Length: 282
Image 1 (tube, one colour):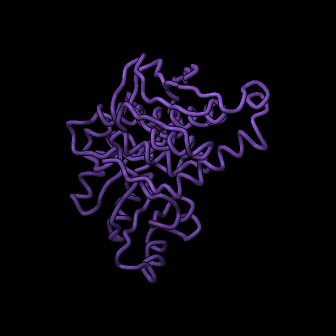
Image 2 (image 1 turned 30 degrees about the vertical axis):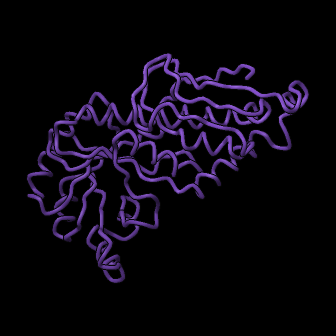
Image 3 (image 1 turned 90 degrees about the horizontal axis):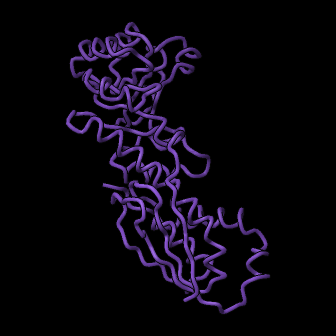
C-alpha cells in the first residue's frame, strides 16, 4: 500500500524544481507562443513500466498555472505497456510548456523506481521476506523516491538519521565494539525505539545477539553465512541482508531465511522510464 503523500512537502519539492528549471522565465516559450494559446498534451509511455508520480505531475502544472487541468487516465502502481496514454493535460500552452520538463523528470524517475522495485518484489513474491530501500537517494528527492518504492510494492527503511538507531561499522570502530555502542545507546534511548546493528562477520552477529539488539543488518555476507546467521538468531532478532543485492541474486539471498533485504539499487540505480509529452492546439 503506497504511503499517502503530504502535498505540502510535494509542493516544496516541485517549487524548487521549477525554480531551478524556469528561473526568471521560459524565454523560448515567451517569445514563440502568444499568450492565451490553448493546448492539449498527452503523456505517452514509450516502454512498459509501473506508474508512479502522477500526483506530482498535477502539482507541477498547478504551480505553473492553477487553471491547467490534468486528467489522470491510470492509477499509481498500475502496470502500463508501450504506447499507453497515462494522463492528459489541458490549458494555456505557455504554462504546459513551462512545466513539461519538470513534470516528465518526476514521472520518468519515479516510475523507474517503482518499476525496478516491482521486479525485485516479484522475484521473491512467494517467500516471507521484505524488499526495502536505503538512504542512498537523490539529495532533495528522498521523500518522493521512497514513495515510489512503496508504489512498486517495497518497504521503506528508516527515513533519515533521526528516526531509528542503526549502529554501523564506523560507530562500532569509534565506540570500541558492539557491546559498548549498544550500552551507550540504551542509557538514553526511549523504550519505543528499536536498536539495529550492522554486522559483517558471524562473530559480530553473536556479539549483537548477546547484546540483545532488535535488528541485525547482515552486511555483504555470503548465502552460507546468511543461513548460519539465521540459525544462530533462532528468531531472537529481525535479520536484514544488505550489500550489493542484484536481481540475479535477490532470490538466493531470500531463500536463506532472512526477514528483509535492503537494496540500494532501488533508488541509486533505477533507470528512468521513457515517457513523452505530445502537444497539439486545443
